[in-house]
Image 1 (cartoon, rainbow over the protein chains, first blue to last red):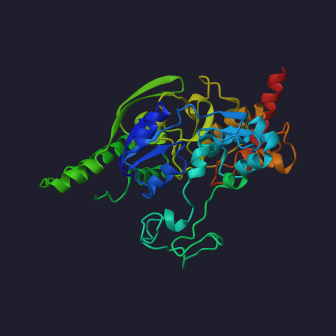
Image 2 (cartoon, one colour):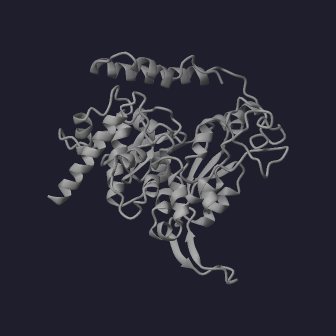
Image 3 (cartoon, helix red, strand yellow):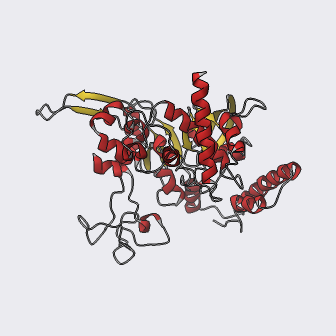
Length: 177
Length: 241
């Protein structure tokens, strides 16, 4: 793993400013990012820990921001952990599909760590992306090609694929959302 | 960068395979540590001509360090100048000599490294030590009260919930959290499958699903389920009494 500086953000302003520097990445639960750093797929030079920002709440029935009359719904903080989201009374009662989708992924330990924002932003599980033994991967190294196109690709995209990448988004949560 | 023929982890695994007495346990750890330090010295101590490129490369590979304080099992530990890359698992095992938490896959898949962070079970191999600064950490070493085992530890003994024992500290920490989560009426995917989404009973299927973050290479699963079932019953009857 490459060396990196660790910073803990106390306000969203400082987090955003810190993220503007080259090689900086936000750190949530780390279940995806730290894993990929161990595989030398991700090599940030600075990690900005955003888990102490006040975004770990679920607010019920917030009025829509744009006021266009679309129905009210809960607002989920990006820092809410997957297990807390799945077990929130409102999500269990009104959005059981979301609860069920979350609980069908990963493990209890990982769901305690993983955040909603991190789940949305997680990298693909394409094995040519996560295995640096394959030099071709446009996601990992833009312009290098796509090893999955002619490789083992039965888990890859049927719709929305291109000649450059046929990786899919791995999130169960995203499908439910 | 050159690497030693065998990483400290690999060396430790090799050495783990031989039965160790308490004395040789200490010397084994000391040996591994010494070997790591010597290895690092060899890797970084080679004289080289300094160029601008070298200086740039050195800056990119020079470790960042931080002074951390980890609160483990109720006791605060200072960790001065810790490499930011250190996982909570490595901090516990290699720096605090709390070797109960085990390194299995080191990728959050096997659960051998499970500890409780502010009372919640997490994979310590994917948690940065820096991120755990300020949290209350409980490891397998912190569950018993003196010589009195935690009820889950006692249940694992009673029901023979292990064979080689390598995954056991993680299994037990996970089961302790499971009982707490169940007390808080949390759901699992089995709760949805069985329609028990109001107040799920801790059936064997629920236990299996809720323990699915912990893998046992010896496949002691039937006894692990029996141990968790017994600990859950004891907790319920204890609560009634």
